[in-house]
Amino acid sequence: MSNYYFKDEKFIIENYDKQKTFSNFLPGIAGLMGIPMWAFYVNRGQGIAGFGIKDKSIPIMEFFPASIALQRVALSGFRTFLKIDGESVEAFAVGSENVSRSMEIEPHCFSVIETNHTYEYTVKVNYFTIPTEDFAALCRSVTFESLSERERTIEICDGLAEIIPYGTSNDDYKGMGNLNRSWMNVENMESNIPIFKMRSSSSDDAEVEVFHNGHFYLSFCKDGQLLAPVVDHELIFGYDSSKQFAEGFQNNSVEQLAGSKQNIENEVPCGFTIYSTKEKSFRIVTLIGNASDSFAIVNQKDKVSKFSYIDAKRELSKKLITDITADIKTKTAFPLFDAYLEQSYLDNVLRGGYPIELSGGEQSFCEYVYSRKHGDLEREYNWFVTEPKCYS
Image 1: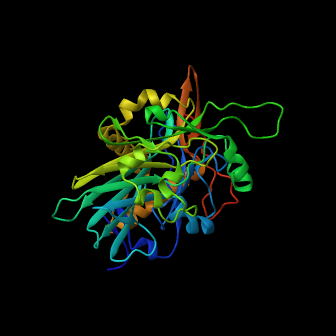
Image 2: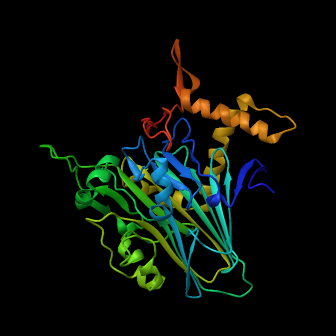
Image 3: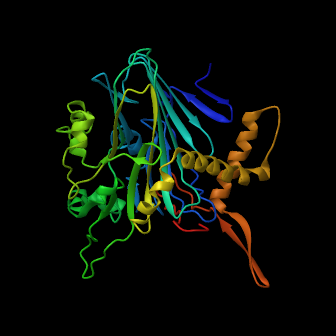
């Protein structure tokens, strides 16, 4: 069988991390009344290679052009560390042996899947952006399934190795990252929804700006029960500043890490969810995003921390896309060709916008929505814009 094939309306790449490299992006369509975000992915590591709001100057995960993103994504991107009956392994790690991996791509989302035949588990990670809300967020749903017949203790540490606080521009972080971290701060730890932002602007100006926006991180494994995240990277990686190995997680239990004091200022934070269980299978959902009122998301925690909410949003994300591509819906003897037509139409909508009629009184006019100036990791010279506002 080919490593590339189309099945059940999904484009599937077997052993994706060993195939020819490519980059792509999630469509960033959040509905007329939603707040969109940009998110790029590659076929290395756990996929996501950068995401944020508006443009590359406001990253949540640092923006890199394709050549560098492909090098860095496996270390500075999303990571999944496991201890199975005390034995450590990293899912999706470079150089792992006796594993099977695949990537499943749909117009509105994508997934990466690993089955480890030595440690007898399967991990599936699905990504999509949250539509029709007053905040922008990337959803990461991680499903773990043990393939062993015996009961085992599973400890997991899953999340993002670096989160860039709001107020840090992509260029400033690249050029003066060591200086910028002196303004970095994590607030609201007590609610289990940390807010990442600069304490104030760091530019050498007479007027100091205080930020009301903020990036946020929240996770849950059971409905309505937020898990306390780890934002101090030293607790996870210990002495390993290269972040190749989770030395801190390997040498400490989840209980020990949960009880440790965290440094929440003057360092580049991370966002990790830690969990220990004897369950054969479980699911962890994480939302990472931005809110214009950084604490407004806290008031919605009961609503967003439910699997039914997440699953409904994923279906709505799919429907928003299919409603657009319905204009060119085609049925031939070749499903791959039909999907190609719809994807090409969607890509062109994102370049030029989708016309809708707005009217008020006796006047009406045409507005083009969902338009984003073209840009991707392989065309880093194009300054793409995905406005974080309604009717974007």
